[in-house]
Image (cartoon, rainbow, N blue to C red; front, side, top):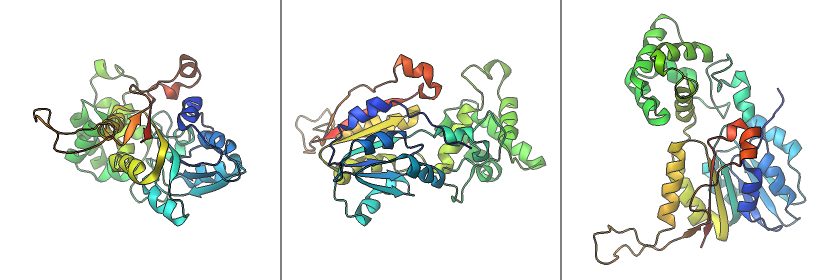
Length: 311
């Protein structure tokens, strides 16, 4: 299958990084290489770009697409492990970090990867194909209570309990193996009037399972703090694209804490925490896709871009 992916807010991200030709940059989510290609093209022979992805297919494709006169490093790693990769490559600081927290179009469109609720395929949803935990295990082995919890927490699905009960009852008869089997169960356990009230009825459940399988929210806050305190050089930029409210809240709250001088209880008459702001917010409100992009790339609809600079 051809690796097609339209990079979200491409120009806005490149502008956000304020790229220096001899700088050192990191793309935490390589995907189809759209963002990385532009970053790499702006570097000279003293510049460096480190590209991370959990998907080996994405990395192999990007190696043919991303070209630069500078130094290119490709890491088959979770971007949250970036510090060890920098250390292995004797990189002491970064001038810019970009992280696009969305799923690549290639993964969604390839039914064999199991991310799509529109096409039939095996229940997988692993960004890293070598991962041991997959969607089939979650759906067939998690307890009703645990399924309810992840559907409500990660999918914000108000019919979490009835859907979880429907899954457990269905798997008693036969194991749930494919995406459309799961979609059918989800639809049957949502009241008819509410079924298509907020888009496809399976969207939130698939999102929740995907987050669980790939640990997408785990250690995200710690990663953001590491970027600022251990990764970025002074004046370096961090740009993060989020696609749903849960991850955006983590990013927003982390940036708020890092950009605030005092974190004391407002009831205290004087500051006793002595905390000082470590970053400045480049945009206080998230940057949203333009109307033109919304029309040409439907998957950009929920995207939000937040940018900070290290003081």
